[in-house]
Structures are given as C-alpha cells and as structure tokens.
Image 1 (cartoon, helix red, strand yellow):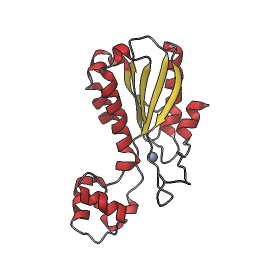
Image 2 (cartoon, rainbow, N blue to C red):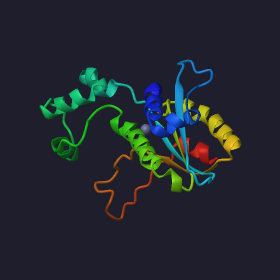
Image 3 (cartoon, rainbow, N blue to C red):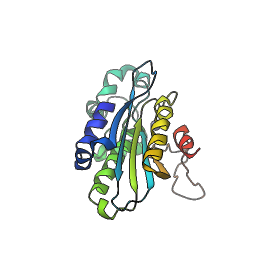
Image 4 (spheres, rainbow, N blue to C red):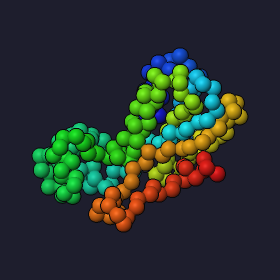
Length: 206
Ligand SMILES: [Zn+2]
C-alpha cells in the first residue's frame, strides 16, 4: 500500500519536478518491514507555515466479515452482494446510501482510504495554485494506526528533520479520520460533535 501511495504522489507533476520532496520511508527496526510515505509541496511565496495532511493506510482485520470474509478485499463485489440482498442487515441510513449507487461498501473504505484519497485530491487542487500559495502542504500517510502507531512514531523523526532542514513551521495538522455517529442526528442541537483525539495528532502537537 505504501508503494501505491508513493506511486500516486510521484505521478503528480509537482513531484516529478521535485522528486526529493517525497519519500517512501522504512520504519526502523520494524519486524514487519513496513514503510510510511511523505510528500511536501512547497508554495512559491517562501512561507515556512506548513499544514500536515495526516492519514493512516492500515485497516482492521477481516474477522468482522464472518462468513463473508472472502469479500473483505473486494469492495466492489461486496457492494454488489449487498445490493442483491445477501441477508446482511443494514441500518436504514446505510440502505439509502447503498440504493443511491454513490457509495462503495467495504473494509477500510471509510477508515480511512477515503481520507487518504481526500488528502491526495487536496494536493492536486493546490498543485495549480502554488504561485500564490502562502505556505506548504505536507502529506503524511502511515501504517499501524489500528495497533501501536509505529508509523506515526517513526515519522516524527522525519518531521523533525524537515523542520530543521527547511525551517518548516507546523501550524496545523488535519487528520481525515472518519467520525462514528453517536447520536440519532449529530447535526441537530443539543449535540455537538468533536473528533476524538488520536495519538497521531497529539504527538505532533507535543
Ligand atoms: Zn482510522
């Protein structure tokens, strides 16, 4: 997965022209030999202010799928299976989403490939505005969020190195992690809905 993300980033014109600004980085002493990916897009206005777009690309295991675990790696087939009426019961809201045809159902799509895709799309949007962009964007995508945060912990070293080398000032970290609905209508008062703090964000803040 790290290779795929790195490949996607390197297909962007900015990183074709600035290949040293992106990297696929091994996690030191990792028993699983995993990697994390970074890609720094620098605005041409020479500001040091930097926004981090943070995601994780690992997913939970397949056990939740029970008898359907063969479908855990096939989201398109799984979505079709649900449409055909497989006997899997969905919430009313999920049924409406399924019927709309606008959603893919499957493992890791919400948590959090959609967030990673969103971050990549933001990079695409900003790529064409770099002449007037007053700052920098650093995409960071790590493995192991669902367990011990090995990817995030390893990447702190890189964040510190980039900060020293380029004088970056990290002003904000946007974690595109999904939120899980806790109330019937979270958009209606009196409930306000705030993201749960992740170890990822708190490490960077600290
Ligand atoms: Zn997540």
